[in-house]
Length: 127
Image (cartoon, rainbow, N blue to C red):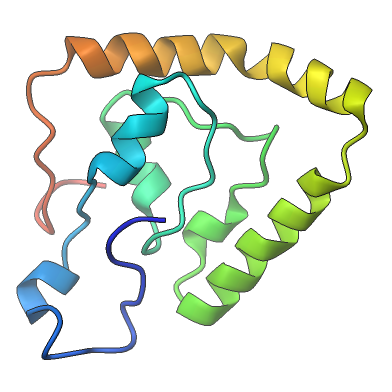
């Protein structure tokens, strides 16, 4: 889960509006990338798209990432939970096969992360 999730609920005490309008990646996203871990990104809509635009790979079709396109915060969360529940039902053999299939993606992301020099994205960053 990223620091920010909700775009439709404004909390003027917690965050200012310009910050809430941005796509902000923190260590919560980059730590699993650096550690070669797969992830489901729990954050505002289009965060996976922004990562892909920076050259990172995501896990579709191994993970249903349709949640990233859902603008409604609550519907997006429902899609994320549905995917986690689907994956939770994997057998041991399914998990081993799945882990084999994600290896190229996690290696690519790990290498790209350590080759990056600029991680800045804001509301003006082209998605």
